[in-house]
Length: 335
Image (cartoon, rainbow, N blue to C red; front, top):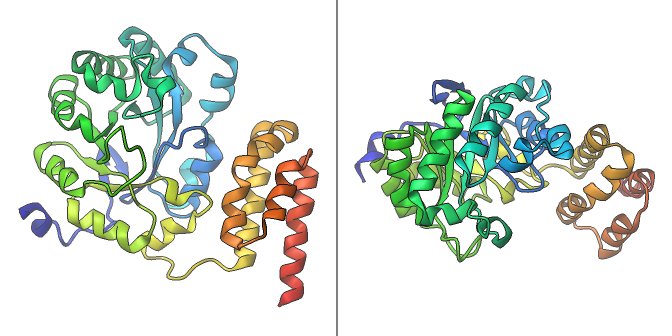
């Protein structure tokens, strides 16, 4: 493909623009559902991400002022823009009602977001049955109306995240709704995260659209990420599940780290996550919330199932910290 040859000199460390907003490099944190709060975005920035997206947030929950949504999901911490290379923060919304989206987008702009991303690729049934997420791909007219409303309501650049079925809808979103960019996960809604992404389809979309395309899907190893960037000709690459409990992947992709983190480094990062969760949610809620985070670090350290069991059963944050401190003590005694 001609585009790959012409852009072979590009680097993931190059700055670029999305909707007129400067982004310091081409490695992006995905909107991780149920996970991508401010401190997860901050973690990605600390390790080099040039742009970070929030987790998927309901436009209806914002519009109807759900307290938890406003007090937790819409939080943008000033450290997010100062850590690592700096760079903007994007909030991802979902919803199928243009007028609700218009109002929600305005509220997101007031919260300090730099841009808005719309999820039109989520395959989860509870989202699709409302007509949102990937269901919008079956209703292009509504998809265009929702994207246009988000831009009008916020005054911010709007991007859209699509699955493979959204290939044809992408052009309409650009031409009729004026979206600033597309994130493309070249797997179908049906397969979700299984199977090999269709990077040829992604490369075709890159060449078909006049706006930046960010490619997502299957980005778990640095060498593969760099290959996908060059092969597709994408403007940027989005790391998602491969970065869970593995922020070092950002450094590896950007070429600032070669090897894997030492055990002590993993333990330090794990402790940092716990501290930030407590800061965000308070000790009681953080104790429950962190149960989804612990397995990532346990797996990276190669710990026994008994450690996982202990952390899941721990009733307080102090108990969780004590268990992790025990692992640190074992590490110190082994060196």
